[in-house]
Image (cartoon, rainbow, N blue to C red; front, side, top):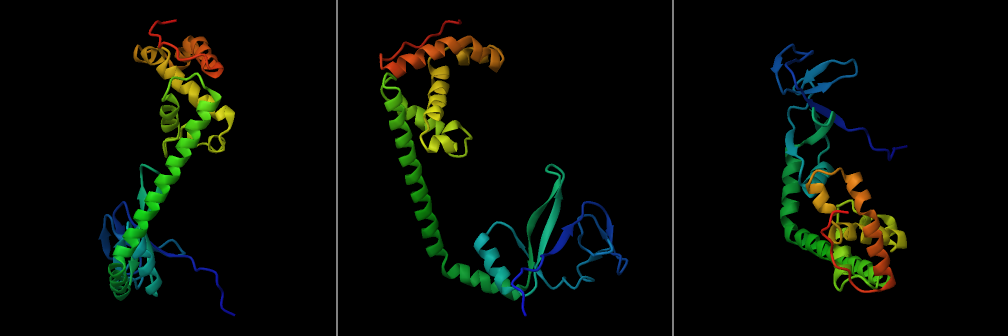
Length: 237
């Protein structure tokens, strides 16, 4: 009975040192493309019966996916990264006719795929903007005394994509009050206290936060009460 389990990919390595084929004994030099056999022997592509394949670099997901589908034989090309201390994928070795067929298919629907990517990007932008608006609205509800327009500034800063800021957390996305408080407090620290000035003068972050903590807490309480905007201070506490 045929198995649906995917066979493990064949792997070809780009060596980082001078290599020699253990099958034909040919000197391959540095950066040779080799296969490693089960007994640890390194063999060249010719001896591995892979030298008829062509290289498809990584980067085009659609082309790679289609080429791999059409190529009966393929191998993943890997190279050791000293910076990251791991093997990283460089692309695929595939059959030439499979690559040609995939290129024709990609050319045929390139406009359609580009339009879909654009639509998806627009949809993501709309969703992000809607989230920012909800975040800002909730910030205004919790802190009615913050100066006009600050809630939008806080939301845009806290919710910036890929920033790792509090607004991207699961709690913030659920508009959790504690997460909102952290975002508002961060804004107050920078905009309503001399915190940034202290950092510029070389004060350690922890000490700088401690110095402005009472002032920041007072502003937060004022905004929460709805007492109106405070005047930014430039005095070192």
